Image (cartoon, rainbow, N blue to C red; front, side, top):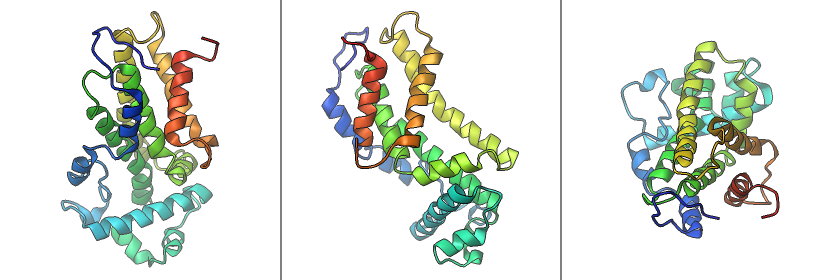
Length: 247
């Protein structure tokens, strides 16, 4: 299932690549230590200029997880901070210490998964050998994408429920983050085309939209217990690269 690039260099074996991308990327621990993967308290007023402790990060994770569940059910306008704090037996004053307003909390909730995904994609691609063909790079990225997003379905549902309700400035900042992640996919597909790994004359922008749209849509129908996210990503890439007609 591997493609060939124009340089004629060797390729990473598909099975090895899949094992690699289902683990925590080797570079991710370093990225997390540097605060690059997830700056949990980035928008919280009280944490400005200092790195939160592990305990603080743990509390904020619980708050964000609870917020995702409530926002997914009730949307932005109808959700009260007290409902989120009650869900984890936390006094609303303690919640406000970490996230002073509902705007701050919802912005962190919708941005946190995007930042985590962005850095995991970068870490996955950085750990691949230089000779890895672009088809396998795209497959590795797809595996990382599904293994990240399909573990956070509450966040995905919440995102869909609040994105058109949040303040405009919150939405614009979020779309800026999304654009940075989307650029990773655009650059991969463009490079694959330049390397001759896509059909000559193909509309690369459209192909990228088909790839990303297919991956994104899995959140609507995926249910645990069937194919794993890794198996699903591999099959999606097989269909997109090789088609559904007999070979």
